Structure formats: structure tokens, C-alpha cells
Length: 340
Image 1 (cartoon, helix red, strand yellow):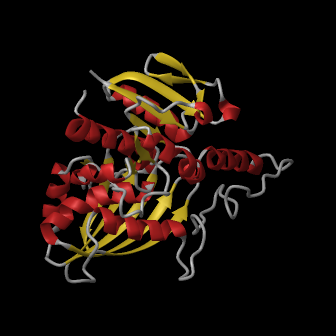
Image 2 (cartoon, one colour; image 1 turned 180 degrees about the vertical axis):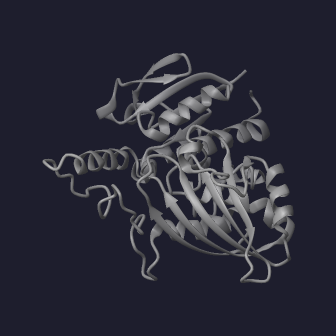
């Protein structure tokens, strides 16, 4: 016996990946519905070897459905998630709307699966920000061993994190540079993204940080440990898919780089590729389509007493969004609903 599953936002990048991953991981589905906005009504999407026709989310009857994976943004989620949850369908939401709600668990299954039992307060579970998800997978096993005091992270985030519009803008601007008769001014991003980097993701806050940077701080504390201090600089780079992070970690106790490497090799969801030679690390283009969070360049930081540096790369459409949502659904099914 399996589950009746809904994917809301099925025509978008993340919704498309949710359908792919549900099929790839053979999630126990008895029935599946692909929802989209009215303007995408009737669009066909793939689910394994099957083809689904999208239904209108506004007219959808949520009664009798078990799990809904939401990839529709905060505004639409605010409207439809409470309706689905009230009908008894557990919502796993990819937007930022519920991440900081104390009554909604924020879950990365490799890190805090025990939080799944808190879903019943609102029948909603939050999926973390893409940059946070991959980082905490690496932080948690190290924190368990040596207690993290402080994290300094700089991100190099692909344009797919901004949706299809971000991908299109990079593609169109790149073509326009080689064809001077066309001009593609910034629209989705604040400045030209082709052949450039932009040290701003989301809006600025009063303290000078951006909303994306604040998300990493708040979410790391909620998922891993409230005592961890985090400071972040988030940068958009001209890469289509795959987020990269340079992470500096200060521990309470000394942790040797070799031991850290061994710990991460055994950590769930982590793949260590760390050779001290040309090309002995993972770049974002190499992680596309993979489930793992890749860790490279693990080394001691000699400027502080108990410090390590590492390089963290993951497919942001997978671990940073769709994969993590499906993994949450797997934990929900295994620990709570227990149908499949």
C-alpha cells in the first residue's frame, strides 16, 4: 500500500526534479497529481515512464491525499498550504514561508530527522534554503565530534536558484555578448550575470546583510544547534546548476583534518573527493544530477586554535530543493504515516 502524492508547481525546475526523484527513488506512490497555475493548465510532465497532465491548483480537491510537495513560492503557498493541510494532506514546502515558524519543523533528513514528529502542529514541514541544506549535511557530523563554535561561509550560487528566469537571463546575456547587435539588460538579477559575479542574493536588510545570508544563519541554528554562530556572504555566479561554498569552521575542541575527512566519508549524504593535486576536487558542473553533497579541500586553518576549511558543492535543484523534500517524505512515511 502506497501514498497519494501531489506535486504542486510541477512545471517549474524544482517541481520537475521532484517528479524525477520520486520516480528514481521508487517512492511508494499509489496515485500522483501534478498541479500548476491556471496558465500552465494541461501542460504534460513526466513521472518515470508515465506522462501526467497538470491540473489547476485553484480547483484541486485535497481530500484523501496523503503528502503534497510544494514548489510554488511563498505567495501561492500562503494561500494553498493551509487548505491542503486542513484537508489532512501533509505539506512539505520548499518556499521560505514556514521555515522560521516555531510550530513548523525545518528538516534535513541526514541532520535532524527526529523533528518529523512536530509536523502535526500545522500539518506542514518546511524544506530549508538550498545553500543551508548542503552546508548542514557537512556540519552536523563534525559538530557531533568537536562542537562547532563559529562558521564563516561564502557561497557561489548558480542562477537556477533564481528559477527559470535566472537560467534564461544568463543564457540570453551570454549569447548577446557574442552578438553585439542584441542587448539583454539585467531583469531577474541586479546586474549583468554573464561573465560576472553579484554579491547580492535577495533583498538587503538593515544590518547590511542580505535576506539569503540571514536565512543561512537562522536555518543553521534551527536545524543543527542554536549556539552556533554563523556569518555568510552569498554571491550569485554565472553557473547554470550547482551551488558551491567555501566554509571556515571554528570548533570548541581540536579536530584533525584527517579525522574530519574520515568522519565526512562515513556521513550520510556526503561524498568526499579530496586529492591534493590538480583537479582533485569537485566543481559544480560535476555534481549536476547527483544526490550527494561533495566535500573537498579539507584542511587545517592555522590562524585559529581549532579551525578547518572545506569546499562544499551540491546540485541545488536536488539536495538544495527537490531531493531534500522527497527525503522528508520518505522519513514521514517511514516514521509516521507507515503505509509504504
